[in-house]
Amino acid sequence: LVNQTITFDYNGTPIDVKIKRVIGQMTASASNRDAFFDPVTGQGYNVRLDDFGGDPQNYIDIEAYAFGIELPSFRIDLHSRSMDYLAYGGVPRGDVFPTAYTVFRGNLISGGLPQLFLSDDQKLVVGNGLTLNRQEAPIQVLVSSASPSLTPSILGFKLEASASITGLNQTIAAYDFAAGAWEVQDIRAATTSDQTVSVNLANPARFIDGTTREIRSRAAFKPAGPIFTNSYSAGLDQAIWTIQ
Image 1 (tube, rainbow, N blue to C red):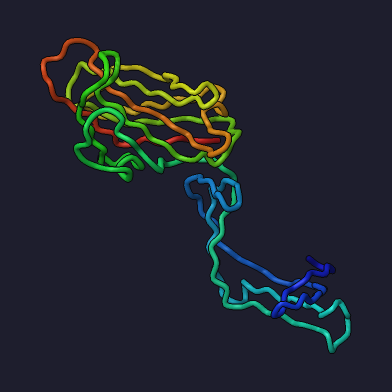
Image 2: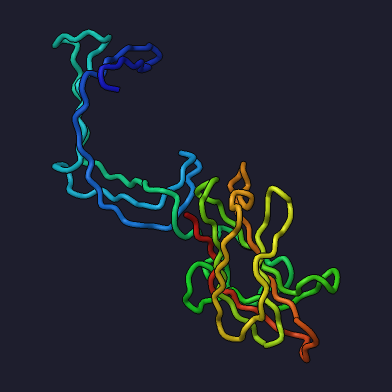
């Protein structure tokens, strides 16, 4: 805006003001945070900036002139002090937490969305439920979030989970928005103690909705063969994406 004229509305009357000079400083401490997408700016960030230092380190002084006339009688001096701000920057890189989950098949026993964020043995626990056919998994949990980038070089998904019994298979799938279908990424035997599985999604852009930036993954648990109980459960300790 330096040496530019902008128009202000003053009680319904447009007034041209020339911004002659801007002098200032803003000082902040930077800290890493989990990557996220900001719908207001349309950008992804992973760094938080907190102001510090008070007025000596954070100030803005503006020299301006009403009607664009550079004479002392038309001069306007603007000073900004006592600023308290929070800003974000960086690049969309790091862990992305789910913003929603759905128990698609099964019955919620305990826990909720926050239990999916950290590897802390605080779990979302889901019991087996009814299915429409024998091919469906009786436990299916869908998680979703918004990708901070539409064109990441790497998009991965990490699941830490366990089952209450042996004899179950654990399947990780990701939703391919280009194909409109789920794509299986990993199948293995579920364990009764936590196991962590990380998968990288090939051609990652297809797993991101180009309009909403939604990313979606599914964890499913199904008997690998005959089992000798009608009731079992799966506990999800962590379900997050990693983006670069």
